[in-house]
Length: 236
Image (cartoon, rainbow, N blue to C red; front, side, top):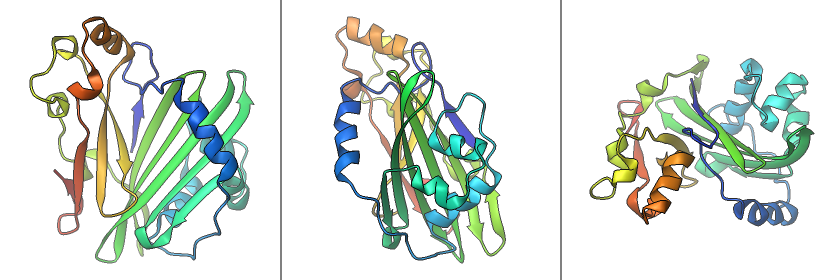
């Protein structure tokens, strides 16, 4: 299942600060492409490979994975689109970063993060892909089971506990965020077996809070979800 986070302004999307992209680009220049990880049927590399075999991107998606699928690139060519590749096999984690200028909107920066969480001979894949262009970012998260029985998409509610907007509040929810529907972005931890749920404040609400002197960064918090193999889902 894909969880879609809409672009700003006035939406549930994640607004990437313009100052962040220049910090990310130098990292691509100094980070080399990692050696390919050893094949692991329960590892995230295999999970991403199987995801790409059935991936049907939305027409509006501009991530490098969507581009690879539309162009019918093979697995090797797909990996080669990403200039920076981190494969942390012992921690069942990978992170790819790539930059392109394939669309009319100009340069697009894509980050792919994937991790697998083990459970009795199978693993839950958490795959997030985020792409940013012209100061706008969008992201999607896929959950899927992989193992001897193959690869099967998992509905988000079957593996993620119920999260209410109030759960992201630090203390009393400020007036500028009352009645606002927050977005959520899931980011797997590189080490351990946790998943971070980040609150995404729509741009209009962000501006309203700034006008009221409210710092949404300190008014909200990320939630840590812990993998529970016995039930095959995350818990708070």
